[in-house]
Each structure stands twice: as C-alpha cells, then as structure tokens.
Image 1 (spheres, rainbow over the protein chains, first blue to last red):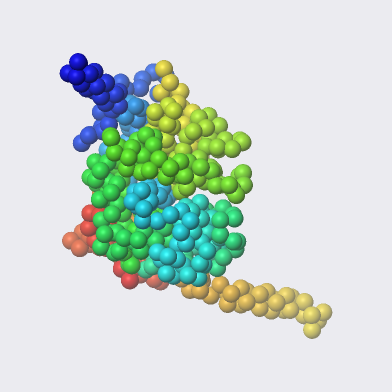
Image 2: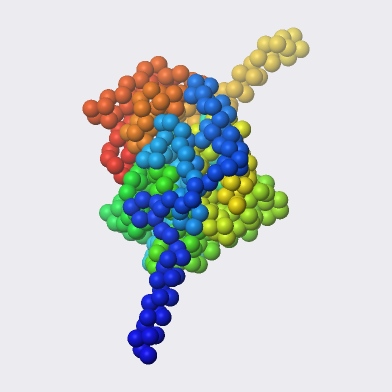
Length: 357
Length: 104
C-alpha cells in the first residue's frame, strides 16, 4: 500500500516535471515556426539592410520562446547567437530583477527611504525604493538623447558631468514634484537603485551579486554589466547579454519568478513589477510603467494587438524583451533602429500570427 | 537710441539675451563639446570588445552627424581614443564582467 502510494506520488512528480521545459546549457528546440505568417514576420523585421544610411527597421536578433522551447531564432550580421548585445534600458528591468532577489532576502522594503542605503539621497529624504522603481522620484530629469543633447540629463550622466559617479549626479538633481506623485521616466532613478543596492550589500558582495543571484542560477554565462568610475553598475543602460540569455530572464518572469523548483523572486515582487503605477497619465510614455517594467494595460492598450497581460523590458534603438505569461511566450528583439519606423505593436502582431496555430 | 538705431538696438538686445542664456547654461555648454569624443570612445570600445563586433562595423555604429577629427583603437591595450570638437576622450576595456569605461 505504502509502496503503491509512493509510486503514484513519484509518477505525479515525474508527470508535472515533464510538463515544463527549462533551458539547460542550451535551449531546447521546439517545432520551428513555418508558413506564410513567418514570411510576413520576416518581411517586417528583416528588410534589406543598409549600414551606410542606417534607415528603416534594423533587427539584429529575433528570438521566440514558447513553453520553454525555441521556436524561432534569426540574427542579422554581425550579431549572432553568441553576441552579448547592448540592451540599453532593458538594463533597468534587469536591475529590478536583481533587486527582487535582495527583496526576497529581506534586504529592503518598498517603503524604505533610499537615503537609508545611499546617503547622498539625504537631499531627498522622503524618496522611497518604490518611488524609484516607479520612475516617480520627483527628481527633475531630462531623458532626451539625440534631440536635445545640451539639456539631456542622461547624456550628461553617461558621457560628461555625471559619468564618474552617476548616482551622485542623479541625487544632486532638483525636484519638480513630491516623491511618488508623478511619473517621469528617468535613467537617474535607475542608477539610484543600483547605488542603493550597493549600500545594502557592501562593495565587494555587490560587485558579484548580479552574477551570484541571477545570472549563474539561470545558466547565463556571458553577461557584462559596465560600471561607472565609482564601481556602481550602470543600471540605466549598460548590461550586455546574448538574446538567448536575455530570454532566460524572460522565462523566469513568465513563470512568476520561479526557476525549476526554486522561487528565485518572491511572487509578490513580480506582482509589484506588473502592477501599474497609480499616478501614471495615459500617453506619458510608450507603455504603462509598473515596478521598473512596462505593461500593456489601460485604454487604449499601448500594443493593441498583444494580450493585456503582456509586459516588457524596453531599450533605446528598438531593444525589447516581451513576456506573455498566458501564451507561454517570451520574445527577445534586438535592433539598431536609428529612425522611428519600427513599431513594437506591428512586430508583436506578426509574431502572434506566426505563433498561433 | 532705439528709434534712431533700430537694428543696432535689436542686435544688442539679442546679444544680451544670448549672453544671459549662455551664462544660465554655462555648465551644460562647457560640457557639451565633450559628448562626441566620449560617446565615440565608449560605445566603440563596447561594440568592439564587449559585443566582439568587427572593427569596421563598430566605426559605422558610432558614427554621428558631428565628425570626429581623430580616432585610435589600440587592440593590445583594448583602449580606444577619440577626438571631436577639440576634446579627446579614452575608454578602456576592463574585463569580461565590467566591460568598457571612460578613463577619468
């Protein structure tokens, strides 16, 4: 009888374990997408490319995962499956994911003032960790890149006045609003999160923390995360991952922060990531901010052709990681779009058409 | 004065406004010429030594409307130096995890 029960239990475990595919050293290849919908996708994502004029849609990598298996993968030279591609602002959501592990380890609460972990923020003593994660610090920040380089806070932070200590540069900003009351997308907020994490861990543990708690557990072997001269990770901009490795983070998020049997991120953390910021006004940005991730919520939806539960990490020049939990789909799109022709919604529409049987 | 020399007056007024704006933006204006050299050195370094893309591709990748007047990639030291608008900046590859950084 006992042996019989044991057998049933074992069978149950085996069956449930079978139902889920996880990448090991490499991704498992599923049945590849084919048909006219794939041609329509490729016509959109991979038109003939001109590196001299840099015009039009310039996809460097497109990877589609369903149920933990690769069902579509294509690269445009010189990017390959082994290229650690610049993710730009996808880095912000990666920092949020690293912070999720620290959160699960009770290293901070969302209501904690940032100044507790990063003393230069004593200039803005009431800004909390949650405010930074919502891009709602109230700090007066200008996020333009190419179009207003003189006034751009982000250009000054990355390349000129702020580059030796980016978090301090952000902390020295004036405020334009009370913390937590208004959304303003800010790379400064993201780098303040990075500096706060350093304050929680100490310099030595911090320097290997993203690898120790996130990259290695997920089997990511080639990650680069550049730092400023103060050795703070440039959480706003400078993480580099292969498309296949970024998809591992996508799969972690699609499965609510769980990797195999291990709950790497608390479920409540992922729920916070996916909860829209209450004081966001429609149209302020290209998608709805959650806790340092982007959501497809509200009316109209930012990407009308994608399901409402879609969420994403997005970066400059067309970088994107999309997660569609109900569809069990993860999409990585790397690009080098120098003009405005590329549209996330159009890509998602065509991927979904190709994925749906 | 204004009625007798309308153009001179307008010119002086504009000059005054420009000087006022220049003073107001003095910190930004002083840093501005550094952008192109710093951007080129840093992003070329990462394109070449972090993403391991070919040198020729990386030169195209970092190209901006404002040209650089000098550029040197030293593969032995994984060090990239660029000059533009009279300013020179250098970025160096530090290692697998830390990638490239502008030198102070």
